[in-house]
Image (cartoon, rainbow, N blue to C red; front, top):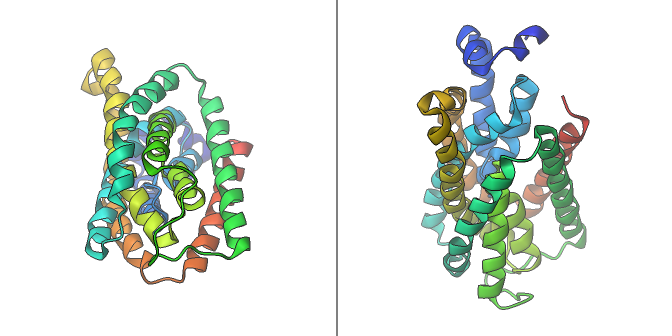
Length: 279
């Protein structure tokens, strides 16, 4: 793609360049697949990818990725429900806290510089890569058939997790799964497959709240026209994201656990490096 074209407004560049729209659609598929495989909602892949394709603000990409993340998590949860691997006690306690967290994150998002958000995003990616690398190196996968050993009572841990997920989801547009996966693995003592399924359910509900908190201020200030770019990006991402989310969730129950963990670490390292380097 012509470098000069990447600086065009999204509404102009995508409409005039079918190739760019196709790339965004493929990115949606990759994000959905990654979100379904690892329970992270898709924004973890889609937002860095969009920064590589366009010069628009990362805040635009975050708002566009949130509703797409809802669909990715939703299609994943449909598959996980059939395998009965979602730990609903975590979800019941965490979700109320995400309401407050989403509100806090949306307030911070309006006050932070876009580059600060990119660096913050990169830090979380790198931290998660380190955590998952440690689990992979340790080589002790929790047994899904036995009750998990938690570091504290589940209600207290779930409330803390819900609050942090709400903040991250509204602030970074990533659904909070980047935090839920290592949290449930390290402190919750859940197996990889149970972690992915439970995280997907948490991401689904958290993303709904975060979408509302990020979109509502824009609608109040600018009306529907204020979301034209975001809506167009979401429309390009959505078909592939839904299909990828369902496929990824199906693969979770078929691929070896160590392969899932290793792939997750590689993706995190690559995307974290991109966020630190910038455009």
